[in-house]
Amino acid sequence: MGLLDRGVEIKTPEQIEKMRVAGLLVGQTLEVLRAAVRPGISTGELDAIAEQSIRDGGGIPSFLGYGHPPFPATICASVNDEVVHGIPGERVLAEGDLISIDCGAIVDGWHGDAAITVPVGEVGEDLVALMRVTEGAMWAGFAAARLGGRVTDISHAVESYVRRQPHPSGGSYGILEDYTGHGIGTAMHQPPNVPNHGRPGRGPKLQRGLALAVEPMVTLGGHDTLVAEDDWTIVTTDGSWAAHFEHTFTLMPEGAWILTALDGGRARLAELGVPYGGLD
Ligand code: MG
Ligand code: MG
Image (cartoon, rainbow, N blue to C red):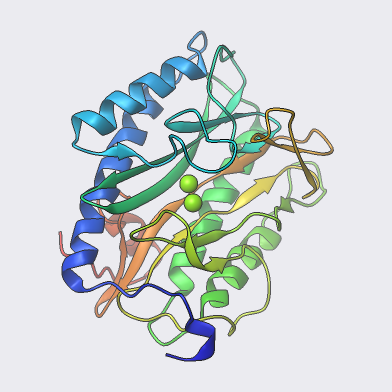
């Protein structure tokens, strides 16, 4: 391993299979939450559903008690101009809102981390485009990842994808630069960072046993953000609305394995012409 690889946790094949168990629990929990999102439900109710799902599946919520001040919930629930790290509570979702739900679980000491953005009832065309672009950028990142490549090959692919998409009102999308994807394994956040912008060919080598969370955060406006008074919620400075998608993935000898996707990423990777390397 070179200097750039310092602190990178390389998992054995058996450990990657344990990460798949954690990843599946996160993926299943997010699907339960997606189905539960509707006008009139509170973010606190969604949080309770998530905690039940994770504990029923034999996991522990990763976010609960994380950081300083300790994060007080199982999910991050970020609504409209909140990008990430929103604290669930009394807020009731209304028709036309956009909610980003980030969820992490630990099973047998191994972490999974994933996020989805979900429309509340019917939302505007601009928000539909925002979600499509953000999710598409994440998949473009996976498609650019190759054994022997470098971490910022992913970053470059994410940014390039977003920049190629037409903006609904002729402006340009904002890509957050202050928050990034990350390595993941025995801890939720490990080296290396996986930025959502930048030049390719840099950072640690993409090698077997490395697991990464790729998570573009994209807005309809600027990329500048503020931390709200609760010390957690990240909101856009210009009030523009945001989307956030995330999956945990790894590279196997045969191809990519999306550890938090229910199908391992098989369907979406096939659409992109990317080999699937999962074991299930
Ligand atoms: Mg996350
Ligand atoms: Mg993450």
